[in-house]
Image (tube, rainbow, N blue to C red; front, side, top):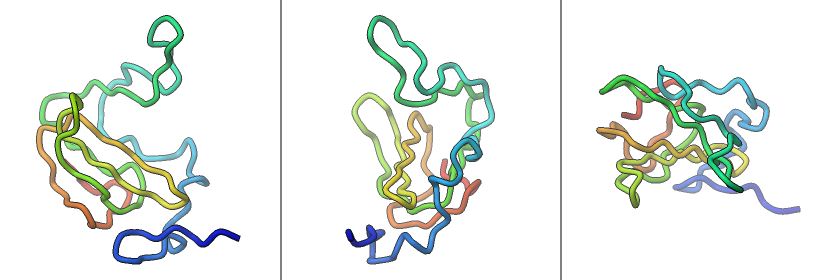
Length: 115
């Protein structure tokens, strides 16, 4: 049997709440209107791989579920991005932030501010 994945610093992700059990109940990362949902059509032969929210300027963005910050910073044309690693090998990628209020290695609980 494959060993459980480790978080940065050797922490065992088996101690975190299971993201797979939270399907459909995760915290929305920002208050706003969903412009595009996961799996929505983006044109001919293409579908959305995420959720796009329209939020007010300087809206607070929060962690959608417990996890550890794996990356912060600019990435390609997505602007400032935070990647949160959750249990079971799942990740949340939150992009388009005007500021980032966390750093790699931080442990976050669902609803904690990230930017």
